[in-house]
Length: 466
Image 1 (cartoon, rainbow, N blue to C red):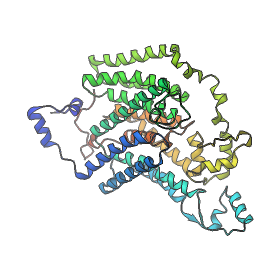
Image 2 (image 1 turned 135 degrees about the horizontal axis):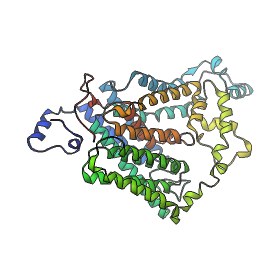
Image 3 (image 1 turned 120 degrees about the vertical axis):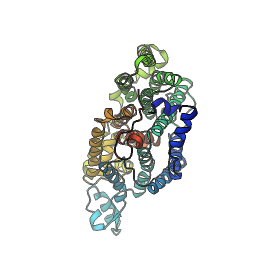
């Protein structure tokens, strides 16, 4: 008897339940450890990694390292394609190779090292072996920061459909928590978890309103993806109600890019709820969600508390300092091409090219454009890795609608595109919370659930969707 999507949530009773229990293979100990560590890493990481807490970030990296150890013992995930494995290998190798000591005769000839060589000569210091990176400690920290994303990507790639749905629901719950906390912060002016320059706005679990907006937008997409599964009526209503509520919470962040992306995310999410499938007479929860979103969209400009949100769009580009120093970053990138300055070296490198007329007490911590920062720190190899990733993502995107778990894959694709778009003017993936969500989204888009085939490449007979 085929098992439909509703039975994945609510198994049948009596003899049928006992038969299913006897037929279901028990999870090996290692797989149980993987699942437990995966959910622990997601929940713990998303609750404590929204700000600059060094000890919490180290704990997240330690959990990720433990999960990676379990994955290594289990063996490679067969759902990850060879090109994708090669790309991930290149991404991991870049900072590691930048730490390899080079002979003095070689690294002194690398582009951008002229000032260092001049200082050594002026101080009559001997030229010793030195790695490619100008700041090896920063490069080591950046390499360790890859661990949570790598661990969750490969763990999610090994996950069956039911586990993927549970992970998506967990991320949605935490995104909703961040949204609700952010609204409280916006209304009360207190309740912030970290010292923040964005006090007065909805930062939620973060110290940055832009990152909270990205998480909320991800929650909207996941609400739509989960809404296409055959859920019990109460859960369908909760999912339908989550979208307009999360949209209102996104406005409270005051993030201009987040608000600019909100209509597109809502449109994509509503299309995901309506297009295709046999929802039949059960479409009224989605109609309710669409009507609620339309009412909110027409009413929010007239809410007095939200007037400061829309005021941020007046002359915003002309007053935004990030656009002013991109020219300096571009000049620095040319200086260090083709090898780059080293992963994590942006701050000291930018200080050497910063326009003196724009120097202030605060320092520029990131390029506010991930693509520029990658070009500066990793050179041609990093840009080729980005291009290769975009090619693989595009290839996977064209086939998402032909898969059995297409609602979750479509929602994940929206999440990935939101992060990539915001990376053009921000640095969302420098935060562990968004790195966790992005890694899961990529795994769901680019890999199939392990139960999508029967192990011989044949499609499973389970029907998961409407």
